[in-house]
Amino acid sequence: MDTLKYQKYLLKIRSFLLSQKAREFLFFLFFMLVSASFWLLQSLNETFDINLKMPVRLTEVPSSIVITSDLPKTLDITVRDKGILLVRYLYGYEFTPLTVDYSKLENTDVSGRVVVPMEDIQKRIQAQLLSSTKLVSVHPDTLEFYFNRGIKKKVPVHLAGEIETSPEYYLETVRCEPDSVIVYAPLNILDTITSVRVMPLHIEGLEADTKIRKVLQPVRGAKLVPSQVEIGLGVDLYTEKSLEVPIVGINFPASKKLRTFPSKVQVRFRVGMTRFKEIEADDFIIAVSYEELIENKQPRIKLHLKSMPDGVSNVRLQPEEVDYLIEQISDEE
Image 1 (cartoon, rainbow, N blue to C red):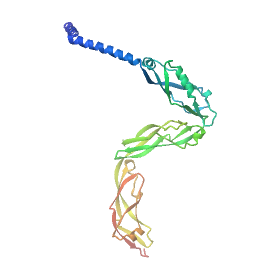
Image 2: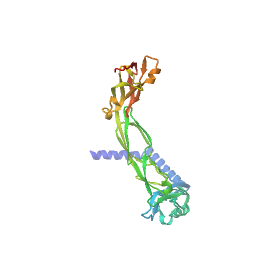
Image 3: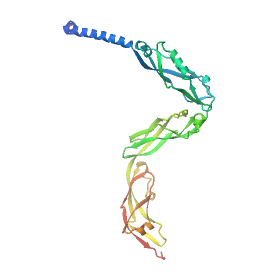
Image 4: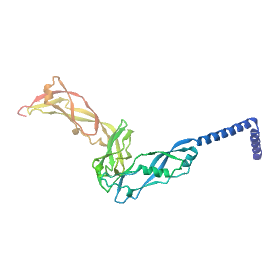
């Protein structure tokens, strides 16, 4: 049964290939391939510019020397030639790394900056190209590196950027590990560095404790050890709390005493779950000054929160105004 099905399929394929439509399609495909081949040959005979990468290596660096800002790993070079010759560079061709011998370039200047002669680099690049290939450009156009002989100092790490939590959360802690790094640099650069910064943070809708590894912002001519830090972000969930806080009078003469009605007010506020039990009424001060009462012409006085603990927000007093009187204290009391 399977053999019969197979033979039927073969007959259908044969019939299709021998049909007029199939012959027309094959002729069309043949001429399209011929046209494409001519177009490709003509294109490859034209002149193009292409971008390539040339590896760079710094060698012969003594163990007593610290390279604080290294050479780039590769040079971006632009070359020009006919397309058929440029194909060689794109497929299967590997450049020999350009080696820069430190011992032949070290500058005795205290700046600790060494500039590699670009004329020499261009000649060595051209030597690896075909004779017909023209070197159009090299980027970067200045090759330099910085070094020192172990001079270093420790500086703090500063954070930068924006961190936003979801509305029901707040940012409780921000920790940086390590909080300081070692900086190696030539003396004239090292003296100007008092701190380093991480690459800016941009976080929105944070709802859980998070750890992020961030690279430090590079400093030209300096080497940072380590070059990245771990930032720990601790978040906490907001909750509402209410406490009864007494109203106190300040700056009252010894012969006078403040009485308010009521004597205590409700203080409502938002606080993180971890600090919910820590916050007590004694952490708040609602005070009314004697001078304020003397100047007040109304039977009620508006209350002001003079002090509150860290970590609370959205604080409200209920009520915000109270009745009061200034009581004269008798000598017998």
